[in-house]
Length: 154
Image (cartoon, rainbow, N blue to C red; front, side, top):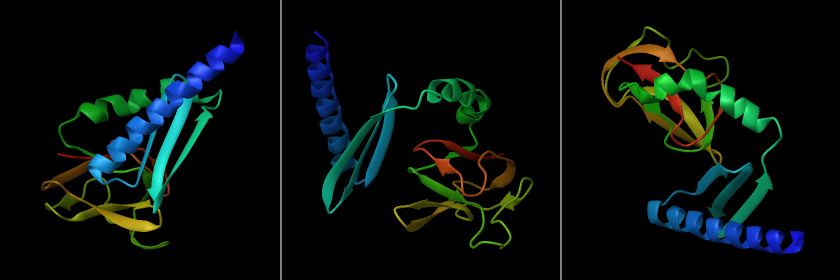
């Protein structure tokens, strides 16, 4: 009976991979990663399509239960700037350089706030509007997920 369940789960994973691959194609993204029912799935393309599925670590549900609590108010804040992609944040243009912005910095629309590196490409994150940076939620060299809050501009 366990074999039937495993076979059924693989069919669901294949359907899930196809669904995510379709999203990649529709949006032009190169990578997407999601987690559902203690399974983390990443689909990426580099010329071809590659997929990876693995159970989430045992500590992940506990971490997930505590991590969103501080970010939840930030996610709903109207001035929240969210990551447009999965990647690694960099708060300064190079190691040892001053950060692009600090809490309390006045920014103008289009000004670079930080960089998100994705697949060895540095993507500047621009201020969507002018205002004051009131909270920087991420730290330097922190991995981020798509739509994860980065900072707040008021």
